[in-house]
Image 1 (cartoon, rainbow, N blue to C red):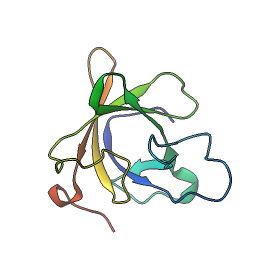
Image 2 (cartoon, rainbow, N blue to C red):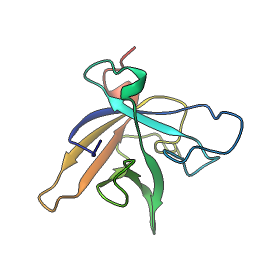
Image 3 (cartoon, one colour):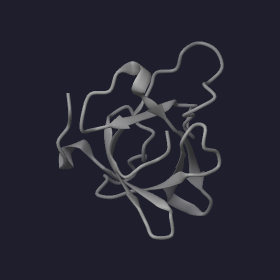
Image 4 (cartoon, helix red, strand yellow):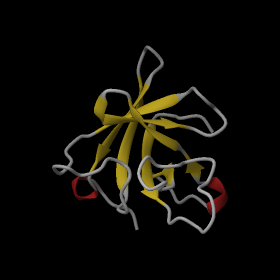
Length: 121
């Protein structure tokens, strides 16, 4: 599924024994990351996984590449209201991302701490 505007939950997934997954591999310790829409529950078969990589020369930005759509569409993750030295995306707490399309057809993804927004169960 292509990256679309909306609010998503992004969370890490514990690694299973063996090699890391082909999709949604984090940039630290091969942490798998998955994302799914915040507005309604999503069954396991509906979970969307994203590959995460740092943006060259941009310490606070990460690319999120949707599976099956390599290398585009992609999203750019930027820190917003985060604690000092807190890793973006690659963490064991659920984060909120606001995904927006720009006229240039780029997709920007902004991260917010759970304490700033409603946190689903």
